[in-house]
Image (cartoon, rainbow, N blue to C red; front, side):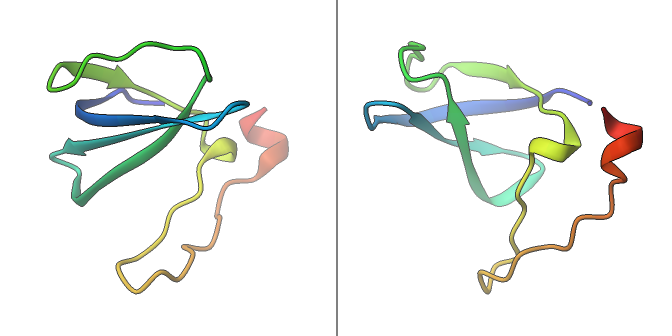
Length: 76
């Protein structure tokens, strides 16, 4: 997967998970990324993100999920 550079706006810790809210050129409406629960991220600092396609859940502005087109057997 290609890395995405994202500027951290906030991190929300929810016990067993945490969510990074940020801005990136590739996401006009911003990004929400699930990260390890104890991972520290400083606000307004750029970070490089990456994920395997089979772990991504993408949505259009209306909230509808983008269909997955990745063959999970090939992506593994």
